[in-house]
Image 1 (cartoon, rainbow, N blue to C red):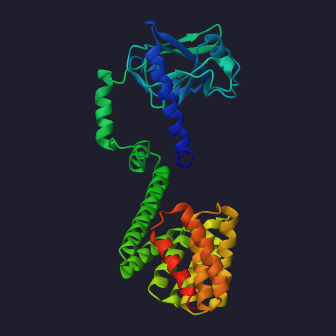
Image 2 (image 1 turned 90 degrees about the horizontal axis):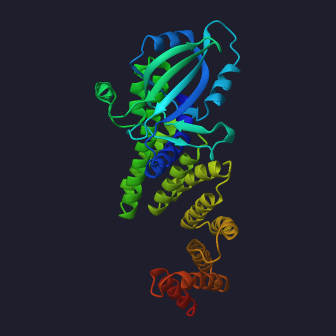
Image 3 (image 1 turned 120 degrees about the vertical axis):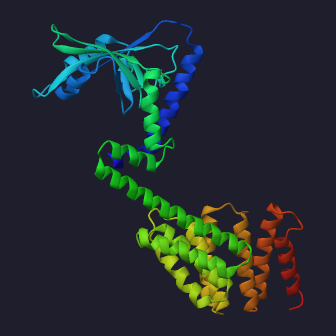
Length: 387
């Protein structure tokens, strides 16, 4: 039950939003003061039927979207054709009166959105309350008829119920409140699943907070604090995520970048290779994330004076970006500039100049002419004149 609710929560929310929107349109355009009558045919268990018969004058709540029809014959025929395979069930037809002047749970005519257009479907929002007006038995068709009225949300008879529920459960709609509802229903296994999900989400949120603090510290050039926060994020992720999860790779790559900036290139390389190992096997592959890690590995090899390996990884990153990015993307300019600097370190000045020019051309197309990146490349080009 909980797993299904959790898996389809966005789908359920979307239906609820659409239904509310259609309901508001209906209320704005409806000029009739007449009540609407809708119908639903289904099977019902004997125990549920007895409970309803003993609750005439009280309220019935629906814990799902309630599909009904404007056509009594459609709903009746549906109920009469239902196979009743044992003595523990009965056929029932709900006849529901809706006073459109009252503030009820949203409902809407959804024929144009429904797959079964001939059913004249009216959909009622989940959580709706119905007043049980009367229950009778149609001997001719051997079917029970339940006469209901869609209850007004402000009905004074429901206020005490709502107040009690809000006091016990709270007004927020989150996993905590869902867990309380499931507990009230006696669904203890589902309660456990609910709170396990809540714990998992809370740990992921805490991990994201540590990563955010790490990025803030990095922006302030506090490399020690940045590393500490990202290590805390990684510790949480490794405790709850599979060892090949993409989010682990993100933390490994970030730590590699931080340690590289600290000039701890050996440590940086260890983390970056862990990130690369995961990212190269992701399904689906996330090439631009992998390209960022390749570039960080290349920069780390530069710090270790291992220029051949650095060039190899820069070119891996460049090849991916050439495939997936437009030719004047800023990151293309960045990698051209880095490859140019690498050639300069190796005294390969002709190659360096070509990469500098490629980077400069991109930057001049997308950046202000006095941008620091443009100024830096122009300075690097001018240095070549004296070599």
